[in-house]
Image (cartoon, rainbow, N blue to C red; front, side, top):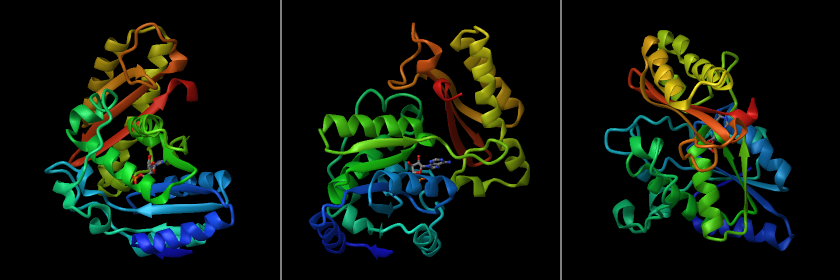
Length: 283
Ligand code: AMP
């Protein structure tokens, strides 16, 4: 596996593949790769003969006071994991490559509506940072397929909209969340949890399945959301939201059937903020 960190290196590899008519599947990440990321790579390998993974901890998607500084950076370990999977190319750009005019001089991509609720409401500016870096990365890699995790459901819907609205010639592929045996979604942030927090963290998934159960029993979303918040608080979480929404638009539910709905949660355990979701169609 090759590793490149600049555009000249990236473009020369991509050109050689294109000359051979090989299609490219792409997995953007912030590194500190785990089994969830590796599942995305394997899915990408099913999509196209060439797979590019990028590792870039994107400063513009972190707000002031968020964990940009302490976000785990483990490039050598990531490189070894990707090489073992026979990934073709690791693109690990510097901030200068991604933001030639600096992070405050950069153009900014804003995807309206879907970004204004839930994570967008809790983390102002976060999705502009995500949309901007994804648009730049797509422009650099020009993939035929881009594989994203359903773990970040709202981000996946944003990327679908961005690709369609910019008429990009790529297919966005979503992959179900990879979980620990107790249901906790794999996340680079799980390592910040102490032993007691880790034991309680599985309640996030347990709460999502409880939200499903009560919705199937006919309870109304607003009542389920209130009870889910209280449930998480009992386990020591500080919830930002527990929500039942229309899965693709993330609008409040009106007449949509359960199969088009999704349960989403975001909560802090100590100083670690975790998110998770469970589409009704998946269960
Ligand atoms: P990040 O963890 O921010 O580097 O995410 C890079 C990609 O991996 C995104 O598309 C995430 O949705 C995806 N991802 C992260 N955790 C998981 C997981 N547990 N299962 C599946 N995909 C994941």
